[in-house]
Image 1 (tube, rainbow, N blue to C red):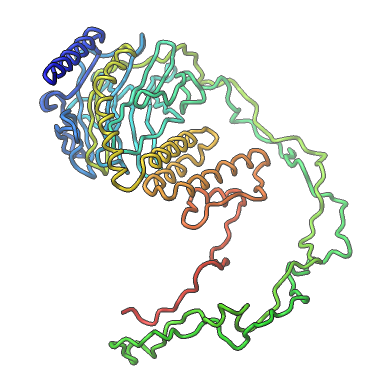
Image 2 (cartoon, rainbow, N blue to C red; image 1 turned 90 degrees about the horizontal axis):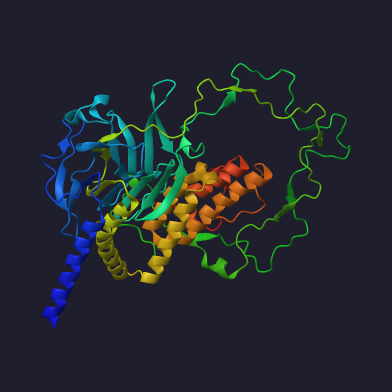
Length: 536
């Protein structure tokens, strides 16, 4: 029976392979690295690119790929395509696998789809200046975390090539699994970006909102010669010029005064100090009074004070002064001379042009030109296809089996490290949602810091709640700015303890316009500092 099962399994795999070959049309370009890259891919001979490329198995698989072999190096390698790929007509799918076997803290793992060499470049001199049509793939360093999509387009009016960057690209997966990056360009100007077959971004190349700069310039622009009139008043409110400070308004009254009604609690120990010498402290044998000074025992909290309401000199507490009014200001009234916020008049944009679709340059080669602090970056199954179904077939055949094996191994490792599958999976979902939140356009100003916070949370799962609270602070801050024109909300929840992050702190600072001097604050919950007598 076992022999028959093995034969049946082999037959099914054979049928699946034949079906794949029959159903899938020939790709425009495909590099599975079934054999060494040497002699087929050209390594740049430029002096800057000292990184060593290796032909290596993907960890845990029998599948080979192109591996970044050293840390802290620049790498450049290129492969010319037999027949240039036209991007102007029909669908074109750009797809490749990347595995960050040692993670990625600072470096790129993207591809450059290069223009024909007539544009002025040579394979052995391939570098960051070599002209490309599209740059696509993950890039991560510090607060930068994005799956780039950049295309270069020739301006029909000036003849210059301009880089157009996708403004809100998806984030890079933070694990060490094999991930599949797909960009689909369609004849109706649509761009779709998929990660592991899941759509993460959809837009139009003609969108004025999703590319910086937009492919098509604005029809009108502000007149650079238009100047705001000197008598233009933009103040919506002004102090009431006829208002007078009331006679009983005391600007010098203090904000707080002693509470005269307060009484010293019964049992207060006036003669007991708050701290006493540690009775268990002993003078070190090697203590030298002449060199180290007179030895003093470390101080500890006075145990007698723990049972009493307090120790030492008692002072009346402070309370808010009912007579306090602060600095007097005239009330605001509507400005009778208010003309609104001045804007220059619009004039026709001399650089405007109309375009029905991008005039992409063809792809004549595929290059990898990166700088990275990490080794272990593996590239595999680089594909250019003219049909989405073909790309999907390759995805199911080449990427998915590897990914599923790696995913199962990851679950085992998480279980072995003490994290339950349920908890780890739940936290993963939380961080996936947070990455999506970071891509929301109105949070663009905080995106890089939010991603930095998320990455710290992924490394320290016990901080998950604190991370959620910190990002909630940012979202609430932005909403209140939108709703109330920058006023700080009455109460904003804050992350506590060590989970209070930089992004939450910046949000707090941004709403108030001021940052409290840390030296002016006292943390009453912190233990009293002990003055060290001598390091031993």
